[in-house]
Length: 637
Image 1: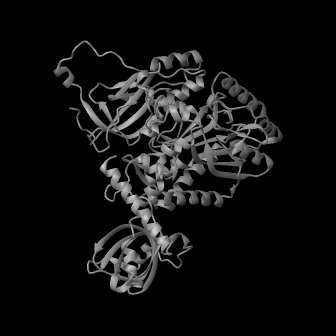
Image 2: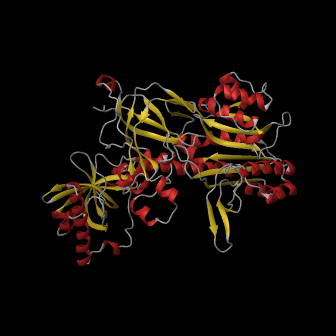
Image 3: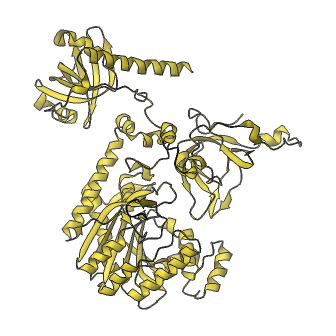
């Protein structure tokens, strides 16, 4: 055990001894049930003239303490901010001994007089102190705070204490959601609730989470979308409905994807996708105006104007603008396959899917300003109405801002026979192994046979909108408790869970290794001269972001700080061994002077260094992880 660990354990022991002593003295803070008539610290500081010389009651957590002799100071932090507390022995008498025993992290209630020190700091002089909660843990060190992203997300409560500016994002999140509801309520939409547990995973193309209902003895699915239930309500006679809530998709995790996320879907009878465009652009504009006081935001160094109207462009035209390839002139599947092979685009089963691949490969990331991409191929739009003038396309759009999709909308398909055929096509894909294809929903087809009026439908990714409006670059920074894999005690308590979950991906804990099962490659016999070796530029790199590469079973995309001003992107085929989110914030080793190499259309600018051996007959890979105190850009010597 290191000296640091000994010191830490000793401090934790002292905290527990202090609590035991308080209980023996009849001062158990756990017996206190309230502390009423509090005044927020921020209110006192903002209205000092009103409170100057008057008594006030404040409660909060001690985040700093100092002083000696017969006088001490504490900084108390509550939800509104922090304020200095001044404790004088000649004022509070014997209670001064108790106050001296308070620790950083303790929660206290203070009644005292508001004043301003000679240095001009607004403070409260304690008249009556009260310990409300004894903290038994150590807060992260004051100056360095809590910076490790992995720990910040796992222990958000500490993050909120030590990095209070994080709270601002979640205040804004709450306001944004409230403004969306206000906007829709003002337009006559009714908010409804539909089931989260479904017997069919429908309404989207995604892999679901599966659970089991013991009483009914059936497998059920956490919803991947609420679309089909909401359209049933339109069939039933409601003209305008919406629902905002959690969706669940058992898919990859990266900077814009979390397994559970917040989405809003709405449906309006007798409307079409043009009406949905108008709602989308005016909703985002209104929310930005009411929450931020402006419609122009800066994101990734780009000035983005959210004011309506937004640009509109057909998907095929957008592809032509970026590549010169006109799919209006490429009518056959065979010709589409040929051009895909020529351009290095993944070949899919239909012309429409190939068109979509071209869009994702060459167009999507170029759409910085708000843009509606319209006229999607029918093969990738199983719930949208076909266009009257081109049956291969649909009345569908997706809205993009800063290269990311934020909304998806249709003129909803209400032809029951056509819907049945599209479901059957999805079922065929599912039977071939596509576990993201949709299932047959006979009851929904029956609802369409009862009659769905012409309807416009819209889905918006609320978390992505919040990321945009708050300037955050990871979905985990707009979710209070993002999904994280268990470590340590959590892992031990869940030891009966699946091997895939806890063994394949969990590289945060140390596994015991039977070295008799390890087999390493023989050392190279050929020597390399020092001059050749010295040409390889090995550098310490910090992982700013890590995400799965779409459509790749192996690749993770690293965005790295290599000590220069420019971010470095490196792709590495280690997805089988590590989850993307577990690597964010880690310190790794990379070769930085290899020529760029295209992988899945992305330039990879170097190589992440790993250690590989054979273990019990299988390949085992470990990333070389370094101490986080080593600066980015440090050269291997």
